[in-house]
Image (cartoon, rainbow, N blue to C red; front, side, top):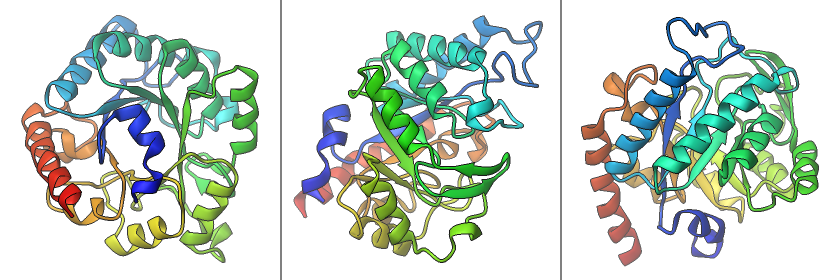
Length: 282
C-alpha cells in the first residue's frame, strides 16, 4: 500500500495514523441544546479537555463532530448556526492541540463541514455519502461529491481533503444492492474521493477483515477504518487498511456518549506504535 499513502502522510506524518473523535454536546439549533444547562462555553471546555486527553495519549489527529445533534437533518437543511458552532469549536481545538484537526457534520452535511473547516483551519472533512444513495435515519440521502468538489474549488480550499465513506454505517443500502462493495469503492474513487472509509454496520462495529481486504485491493486511494477498531482487531484490520478513526473504543465503557478514557487511549496507541514497527519491518 506504500504507493497510496501520500495524502495521509502529508497530513499526519506517520504510518497508519489514528484519528480520535471529539464528540460535541448538542449545538445551537439542535433539539438537545439548552444554553441554561450547557451553552457554548461549556461545550468548548469539554471539547478542549477531550482533545488534550487524546493528544496527550498519542493519537495522530482529532475529528470534531456534531454527533449529539440528533435527530439529524439532511445536509441541505442544516442551518448556519451549526456551521458557526462547528467552526468555532474546531478553531479552538486547533489552537489547543498540535495535531491535525478535521470536521464532520451529521447528516452528510458536507457544505457545513467544509465551511467550518475553512474557517477553523481544519485539514479534512468526512463525507458520509460522496456518490450513489442510501436510506439514512433522515430518509433518502444522496451523493454530494459533485456539489462539494465545486464548492471547495470556488473557495480555493483544495488543501482540505475529502474523507469519504463507502457503504456507510447506520442505514440501508438496498437501493444499490446490485453493486458490490468493490464497485461502490470504485465509484467514489473515480468521482474524486481522496481518502476512502470502510465501516461496520453501526457505530462501534468493525468491518470484517475480508471486507477491508477486498475494499483495499479494489482501489488506489488510501483506505481507513471508520468504526469498530480495538486493541484486539487492530493488527488484523490495519494489515489491510492505511489508518483508522476511533471513537467508541476510546470512551468509558466503549460508549460514544461517555467521556474519553485516557488510559484506554494510551494503551491502544502503545499497541499501534508497536504494530507500526512490525508492519514496516514486513
